[in-house]
Image (cartoon, rainbow, N blue to C red; front, side, top):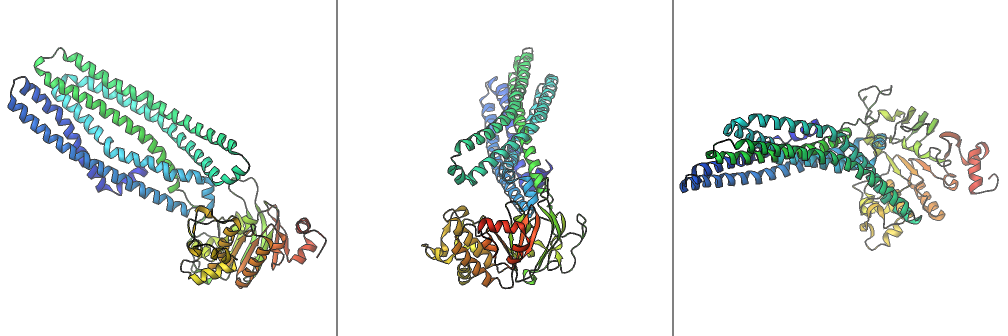
Length: 584
């Protein structure tokens, strides 16, 4: 709950204003039965119309004040809780942007989405409930108890017993409910993950007619969530009626004891019963808000886990990994100061939780202006290798050097501005084609957009569209083919004019003629760039300056096409399987 208190403290004045109006409303509610007792005992009993009107007028004024307090309390509660919810979501979003890929892999995207949406909503509802109900409940409850004791002192033992039993039941409710609501949120993560996976793969699901299988998987996840929700709500279903029963029994005992009192005090008896009803309502409110608090506490713990998550990759490191060190002069550099020399020195890498290394003892150097082809069987570590260059992951052993400096000691922002990556799965965003291309460089002119698109062989299909570069793309570029998306992603990367260009099998959806034209355009524009060209097709990498052949995370060969055809069995097998024949 410390997290919730910390966010509330940012808006102390708004919170206190809401509590002040809430207190005004509560005091108005407490005063009504007392004046009603006076109307009965001093007005109705004695047939004094003047007393009835006087006390009635006072009650009307108190009611108006209470109404003003209620309206203002609702306003401040809603405004403050939603403002805190907005800030918490923004903080979570910004924090996620600072996390390393390894952190996100461990937390899981579906769980992160649940925490930013559902968990924050739980906390927001709790804060709203606190300002609208929870702080009113103790004021009402304590005030009603005090007034009963003042008007009917003999009822003090009953009040003590009722409060003790209610406190015990509320405590049991919280202790049993907290872990169950935590399990419910975890099950909600699972349901979101299944839903997200289905929506992302809906075309594959329909292509294989796997709707029934996916429906069954969703039903299982939904059923698990339902069971967890039932288990949590079952606790509330048991304890809430018990709390109500306790207060109602107290009311019965109060009435039973009142039969021995003077009938002249009927007004006070009515007030006592009214106050007992308010106590019942207040205890019920406390019970309900504490149930919400249990859910909010479970959600706050999940939110806190992200906010306090320490990125695996730190902005600066020391020569000995894991030790803190200040950044040395010259470590943070502008992208224009990079030359693009890349060197791997005895690099090994293992994904968190994986049983075996994805890369083992990788050694090679790429100089500015060179194109390095990377080829190998599926799962050989090609994409993993290039992911270490922009520091998406950190090597578990060895060093990745850019211009002679270890990337773990470099400023990641300037490093990534000097590197452009074109993934195999082209990622486009909702917006126009021009807006998507300008992810490469925001200040690019229309002519520069056209030139980049022309190099990537995307200008023809863009010009054929009705709105050209202002054509609106759907989410993920759903209104484009796979090849069109790849070419736009490539144009976006070229627009950045990077020092290091990583092409991760980004021409897989192109036909051979278009691919050859695209690669030729890249060769002309990439003068001075260090280009890493990953491909499953040997025809794509044959003309590279050096070809890196990987298998099972290890380098099997490094050299030109002619060299590898003589010395590397893995490369020879790939060549024969795709092209056939013997040597060149």
